[in-house]
Image (spheres, one colour):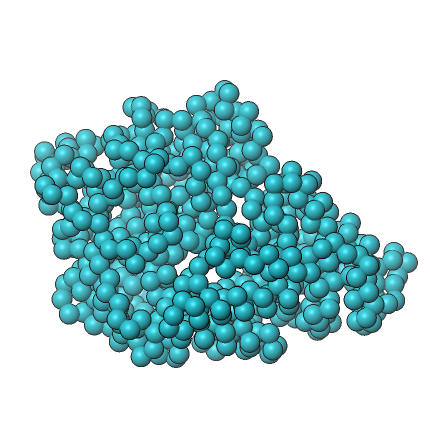
Length: 624
C-alpha cells in the first residue's frame, strides 16, 4: 500500500474566501488550527490536473432524496482509499502498518477534526466498537461479518488518541479493501454527538424525551436513525466528507456546504475542496437525461444511459457542456441470474440442472443484442473479468456463449423437456408450460429492449420469457425471499481485478448475489438466516475463497482466482450478455480536474470518488 502524502513544507495560511469572514469574526479557527498534522496533500500531478481556484456551486441531479448518500460516495473520504491506478493508500489515516497479514495498526492524523470542530480520535473508534458494534440492542447480529475471520472477531486496542490496532489470529486479506469501499466498513462514529442517544451516557429523562420527540420506539431505534454516516440524512451528524448536508428531508433541493475541517490540501497547502457548495436537485429519473442536456447539471452520469449519448452529444452544440465516454468495469453490462434458491421446487430443480443453464445461455443471441442495443461496441460473452485484467482468459468469456439453438434444443430434450403445448412452449415435469419470468428493478428501457430480443431467441428453444419490472427495493426483496425465478442486473462489479483483490463475489458470501441469495444470507447472518450451500458448486467455491484468504503469495492467489473464474464459466452460474459498454459522463465545460476519459465504477472506483471531486474547480466565477 502506498504511503501517506507528505505535508507541505510551510504551514498553510490562505483561507478559502467563503470562510474568511467567519474566521475574521472569530467564529471559526484560522486554517492552521483546522487542519491535521500532517494533512493529506493531493499532488494534483495527473495529466488532467492543475492547481485550482476557490468558489462556485456544483449542481447535480438525483432522482430521490435517498440518493444524497451518493455525495458520501463521490466525496470518498475513507480511512484508506484507491488511487486512480487502483492502488490503496492512507487517506483519513496518516499511515497503516500491517504485520503478518493479521495485525493492522491504524495511525490517525494528529489534530484531525470532525466537521463541527470536535477532535477525531481513537475514542470515536472505541465508541463504535464497544458501544455500537457489540451492543445487542443496536446490532442484534453482532459486529459486521467483514470483521469475522474463521469465526473470530479481532482484538481491538486503543493505545493512545491517534492509534488503533486490530489483531486477528488468522490473516485478513480483505480488511483494507473493505475500508476503501464506496459504502465502506465504518470502524468509527462521532462519539461526542452520539452519546446523547445512548443509555450508557445519556440522562434517562433527557433520552426518553428525545425518543418521544423523534417518535421512535426505543433508544436503539433512535440511535440507529441518527448514527448512519453513509446515508447522509441527518444534518446534525458530524462528518469527515468534503461537504456537509445542510438541508433536512423531505426536500426537492439539498445544499451541501464545504467542511471547514476537511483534511486534504493542494500542493500549496490550500485547504480543499475548491468548490464551496454542492446543490442536489431532485428530478424524475426519466427526465434527468433531458435536463442534463439543457445544462441543468454540472456533473452527471447517474441516470444517464448509453442510449442517451447521441442526444447529449447533439446538446454539446447548444449548451456549455462536454460529453465523454468513460470506461466501465462491469463483468457484464447486464446479466441474467437464475435463482438457485427459488421457492418453486420445479423451477429450482431446472435451474440447478447444469444442462438447463447451458441451454439458456446457448439460446441467447448476443451478437444481435450487441448490434441492436449497443451499435456493436460491446464485448459479447460471459459475465467474467475484462481483457484489461491480468486474470483475463478468453475461454472464460466464450464458454457456452455461442448462439447455438440446435445444441440448446438438444440439451433441453436430454433433460426430458420434450412435450410442448399448442404455442410450441415446452412443458415442465408437472405439466406447466416452461414460462420464465425475468424480474427487474424497472429503471431502464435498456433492460426491456434486451429482454425482448432474448424472448425471441428463447422462443425458438421452446421457452417463454415474460418480464416483470418493479421498484428496486421490492425487486431485491423478492429475489432475497426466493419469489423471483430469474433476475436481470449488472454483472461482476469489478471486471478489472488483480490476484490481490478479493474474489468474494465469486463465492456465495452475499445475499445480494442474485443467483444464490439464501446461501449468501446464511454467511452474512452467521447462520441465523438463509441456508448453507447444498450444491457441490457452492461448497467448492466457498472452499476456494477460504483458500484465497489463507494464501500467502500472489501466485497462489492468482491460481485460485483462475480456478474460480473457470468454474463460473463452465457452470454458467450467471448468464452474461455484453460487457465493455461505455458510460456517458456530462461535465460543465468550465469544470476542471476531471479526466476526459476515466473509470466509472462502483467498487473499486466510487464513481467520481476515485478522482477526488474536492479537487474539481470552475475555471470561471461560477454562479452556475
